[in-house]
Length: 386
Image 1 (cartoon, rainbow, N blue to C red):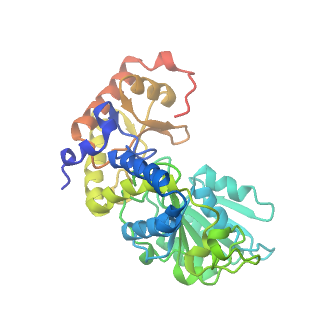
Image 2: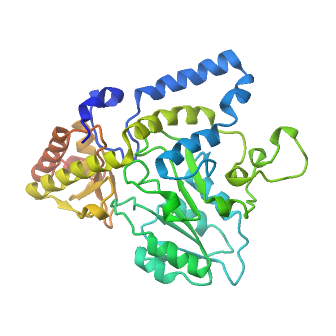
Image 3: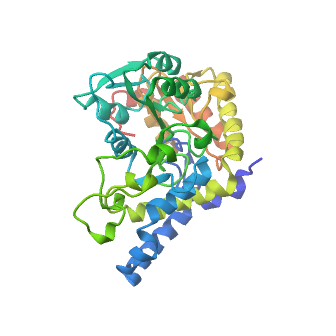
């Protein structure tokens, strides 16, 4: 069992507030600041030599560290700025035609992913109710199935195995978005046998923004040629050859010059996740989220996220009379969380391994008071971004 007290001093923001928004932007490890200082020192002292001394390889070496966390073989994960770019690179590998141009996903898919496919004039997008309906909707016309491992609004874990199996039968490719699961829900990308997986570091991986990632199953990588490509995807980038020759493996899914400072920052989070282990984090997460559910039940607050441990990600979503207004009042009381609009929205509470039971009790107690007393009412109609 994880003792939160052993790790709290590694996350400075925990000294100033009750931080329960790790499903959106996890608390920054203090080591991230040191890593960024090391980046600045390296740039200052080594200059252009830094490229040959590690910078150029970081999209692969950092990806390999993620591979150890996510069950992916070396060389199968490459780093990008965000999930939208990663999914666009995947999409660029295919030439939709009238016979196979369908995209199938669940209604709960993250909007940025949905927007990418909706914007393609040659694709027919089919959005269905849930995971089982996704599997049912896949047929020989389906090209890609970009689905979420954990749904962002309510934290529900989807059963992806039937979807992957049906996609293989139909000749479609699954793109699994693991943004809401990586670092808090154990999984093995090799065992899942998905064609592609994407994610980022902002959330449970504690790695901050600008460090998205793309996994390509090794046998898939060798037979596809993305058209969204840059010089890092060339077999010999520093030969500056005028014609494209793809690198081998997942390297061919790289684009231009990498986001080096974001990768320096991200490794601080990966280090602590790798040190603790996702299985132990999951055990801690289930304990804290169950406590939140029990406390909400006792306070008469309605839970709209899954109660069953096997279906529950790292987030508990609580229905309120006005989510935005309650969120605003919680923030004024030093409780950092977020909300998502209805339908099936609510206040989202996302404890990580470093949060305590007392923080969970405090957050629910304050939320119950805000709802019961009407303290949220002065904030009704107030606009809020986060």
